[in-house]
Every structure is written in structure tokens, then in C-alpha cells.
Image (cartoon, rainbow, N blue to C red; front, side, top):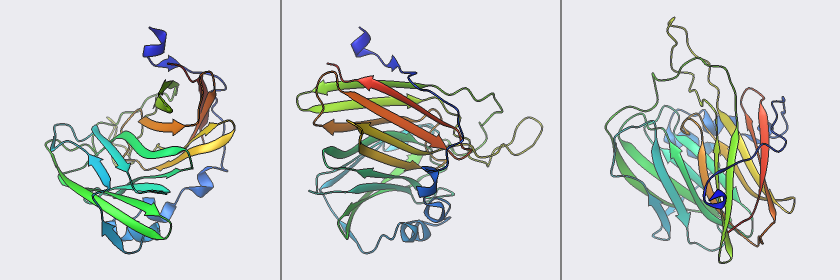
Length: 254
């Protein structure tokens, strides 16, 4: 049963101020207030619609605080996938870079402030391809539910080999506060969110994800790696905007 459940991974879990990774976080793009500014911040140029990009999202989201998204590119040599919600206060949700051997495919959960177009842009060399979908939001997911609480992060991971592909799932306990909510005293709760997540196999980078405040509380990610064997160790590290960091590792199992 242990192989079929998330495994608590506390190897090297830490709360240390680490600034090296966060320096790569694109402040201009993630803090942009319009879709045009956000895409410009990532230097995205002419976008070509493509049916080789898949965006799986609900037609209607009952709770905008937790909207599950799957984005996939079947375009060869895809280097990165950027996820946007056009009508969020800050439209850029995540920008995920994939190395050779990692499938350009990611599942995560996001916050949506209102009904909006959700868009994925795939970077392939110096070209950009895109697809989008309208998602109806029945309850605002970007405000009012944040609460003050002691920060006690943890990381759970699972790495399961299916054929030649390892499916890696992880959940990081983190408040992901937006900086737009108030506590019971009417005071603004500062933004506290995951900025960067990296994954390595054999000490080589396989994925780097940069995130915004619009990733849902307790970030959830699934990604897919080729070239791993049973027993190989996959290491995940994260860092947030307040300088806290943590890490964990898991052995590939079946």
C-alpha cells in the first residue's frame, strides 16, 4: 500500500533563507496586471494557435480557489509551458521549463478570480504556440479566505515508474497567501507564496517551475520524467518569496 500512497519525504527539509534560486523569478512578468504585460515580460512574441497543445480544465469551476489544470505540448522540442488566466489580478500563473527527457506536461491546481480565458503558451526555440479555454467560475477563488497561521511546511512525494516514464506527484504544505486578503483585525495578510520549484534526477535538472500567488494553497504538481530506473532518487527543492526553502527526495518505485 505504501507505494500507492503519497510518501512523507522529509530528507533535508529546511527553513533557510536562500536567495540564489529566487533571483531567477521573473518579477516583471509575474507582477504584471494585464495579459499583454505578462506575455511581454516573458519575451513572448507572435503566438501561433496549435492543436498540438492540450489544456484540460473544467467548463465550470464551483470553487475558484482550487481549479485543476493539465497542460501538455506534443510539439517536438518544447522547452517551456507558460500558464495564464487573463482576468486574474496578475495573469501569469506559472512558467515551467522542461529539460530533455522530461515530458512537456504538467498538472497543477490554480486560483481563478472570475470567469476567464485560461491560456497556455509553449516555447519551442524562438517560436511560440498557444491554446486557450474559457472557464466559468461560480465562486471567486482569489480573495478573502486567507488566515494568519504559523508556517509549518512539509513535502509529500511519490515517484511511480510506468513503462519508460516516471510519474512524479508532490504536495507542498504552504499557505500561498495572495497579499489581497485581510485577517480578523482587518489587516492585510502579506503575500507568502511559492516562487520556484526544481526537480533533479542523477543531480541533473529535469524541471524548473516558477509560480505566482495564484497557485492554490498547498501546491500540487504532477510531472513526467523519462530515463529513470527503479530505485533512482528524484530530488525536489522549493523556495518562497520570504526566503524560506525546503527539499525532499524519493526513490522511483512501481
